[in-house]
Length: 268
Image 1 (tube, one colour):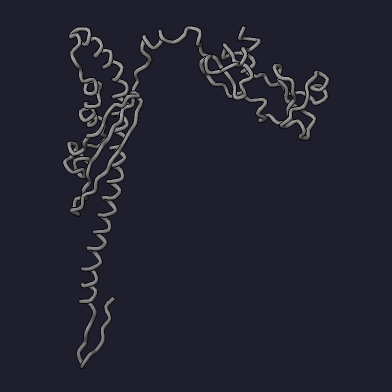
Image 2 (image 1 turned 120 degrees about the vertical axis):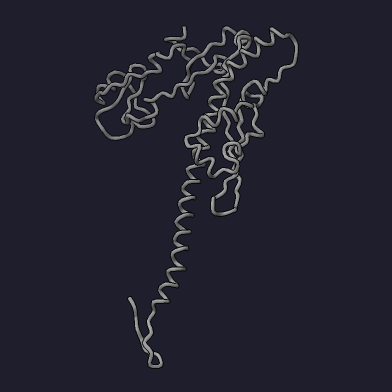
């Protein structure tokens, strides 16, 4: 819209004002648009780098066992020479493996200072508990702003080393795995023991009492003429979700159950 008015007998209009406003607003709009565009890309970039780092740690964890077997075989060949197991075990190979897991390498080269080579793994190591610790550092710079910001990622991944033969032999053969519930009334040799896999039946309250079942201390006082019973238990239940009808089973070593007695059904 062009508004005309007179000043001193001359006809004036506001075309010049509109041009000035456009010259100011359009660059601000473009700057805001580009800022939002690059912020979205940077968020995506951080996700890409994190996923690649996670997959790299999993790869190194999977390779650890094979590499350790190779180290032992090499030790037999060369005798008592020192071997840098920290280097051979794979953490040093992270920078070589990592680029292959990047879903969008062009975006990394665009925003990361130094591109893929700018992502460093200094400080990565394998600890005494066979955990692989990856420590990534990189800097991001928005193309039209000369501001750099450093980001760090730390990932802890358990190495897949299994159990050594000497460790297995060192264990007592009698220290077998057994199964226990939360209350640990008895330990079970078989996971399929009927005491662990309850068979729940629906019955009337009168039938349950005639069969010798007593009311559950947790849910037995609730109203209702129908109840739940099990062949292995001695209580009737009004609530199917009662803890007396559930079993949280844990697999543990026999030495961990203390003085708990074996199950009369499967522990003999």
